[in-house]
Image (cartoon, rainbow, N blue to C red):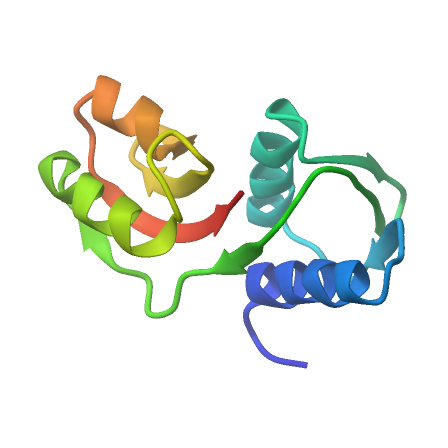
Length: 123
């Protein structure tokens, strides 16, 4: 088990998809992971339930989700460069950015003209 809870959870989701499973149980978890899952749930890629010591994630329409390592920091003007690197096409998928205003997608960060640290991407 590594120290990166987000990368572990996203890798577990990808492994479950390859094994044709419909749900996984994630332990341990953090507030940051819950916020990442909340963004994924907002766009309909997953559904999750918080229980007392675990998260049960129901996988839906997801093709790929991965953590971004190393966690690049980018100004809002440079976000498009990273979006082209990690996503397969324009307007297809999301890059999650940790900003001073909280976690948001790359589209929200560009609209608010806020840069930050790139955490993960999914499509």
